[in-house]
Length: 269
Ligand SMILES: [Zn+2]
Image 1: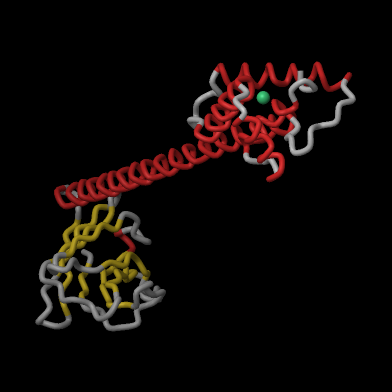
Image 2: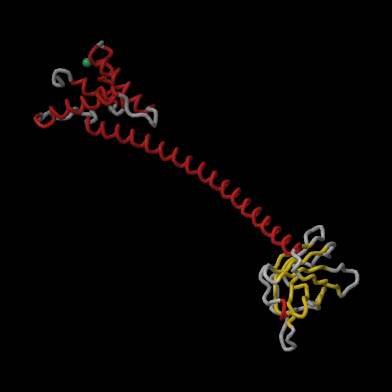
């Protein structure tokens, strides 16, 4: 058939725009002569090319397209092994043409799928980040509530020892500590002066043993409104061995031993 009608072999190459100028002119002249067979073949080839180019990325190749490709491969395969015919000059070998088609399909669909996947991953990351944030907020809220409950328990417990923390400077209000032997110490105060820079307040336990040094404990700071409420869950020493509590102003990270005169001191009795 191709011997009888060589122009048919050019149809797909023509539709792909891969004919050289000479062949293109010859093919167009042949079309202009009104060959119905080539016209039909060209319509099919153009349909194929346009469907490859605009194929919906996620969709499967249409049935018609598949059948067309398969039948073309079969036709080619039945001819190729036995045919010594030379490929018509300028014609695109059908297997190459199929390779191009397959690559195009694959690129479109895998590229598109990768794009969709990356969008999904981004969306999921956003959702996870927001869930994580909510979770962290809840954990913080729970921690605040727990701490609040522990403080209330210490403050309300009749077994807690009340310790007045008196200021060395009369312009500073006194603080109050309540110490429960199992639950810990709560320090409360109002109108506590602001601290210089990023300084902190630090609690010290002064041992009864005269040769003992002040034992460093928690660091804390008043709220902006001057309110102070600090829970010390694990003081470094039991109440029976402690003579007094003291609070000094220290650098941000706290100190191993007091670096300034205590602002407040309270005797444990
Ligand atoms: Zn023709």
